[in-house]
Length: 73
Image (cartoon, one colour):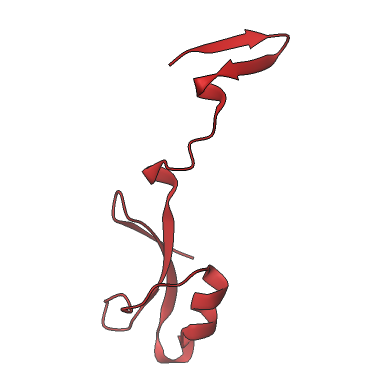
């Protein structure tokens, strides 16, 4: 991978954003009170929030599939 800097502008392959970087791929899910994820996919956080029932103990979570880390927000 090469990167060139000319007049303050970065050019080359490092300047391109990698949309397929698995470290940046976050999925939204609903964590059920029993500790399992709901068995459905959500297109957005808003969709998951509309589907979840927080009064029943469900939580909307963001999960990075690569490291299997959960981010509760």
